[in-house]
Image 1 (cartoon, rainbow, N blue to C red):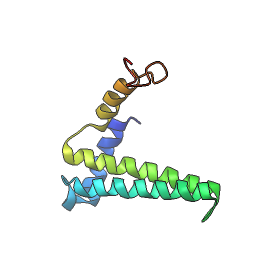
Image 2 (image 1 turned 180 degrees about the vertical axis):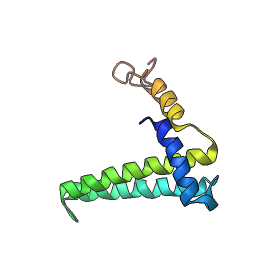
Image 3 (image 1 turned 30 degrees about the vertical axis):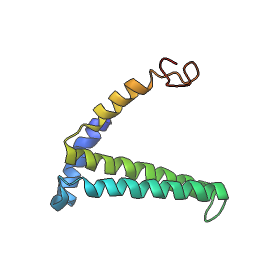
Image 4 (image 1 turned 120 degrees about the horizontal axis):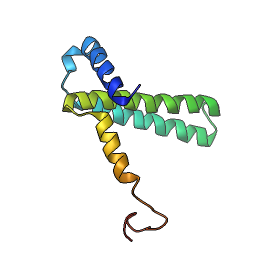
Length: 109
C-alpha cells in the first residue's frame, strides 16, 4: 500500500470516527508531538534498561512511529496536502546531499 492509498483509506476512517474535528489540524499536530514524547520515553528507558525489556521498548517505539504517521495523515487531510508528495519531494532533495564530500552544507562545500 502506498502512502497515498493509505491517506485515502484513512480519510474515510477519520470521517466516520471523528466527523466533528474534520478540517482541524491543531489536534493532529498535538498528537504528533505527544507521540514524539512517547518515542523519546521508550528510547530513554530502553537505553537505561529500566521499566521494561529491550523488546517491550522496541514495540512501544514502533507503535509511536506508526501513530505519528496516522496523525500526519489527519494533519494533511486538514491542510489539503498529499503526504506522499511531501515525502517524495523531501526525499528527492535530501538524497542529493553528500555530507562526507560536502560537510558544510551537503551540496557544495
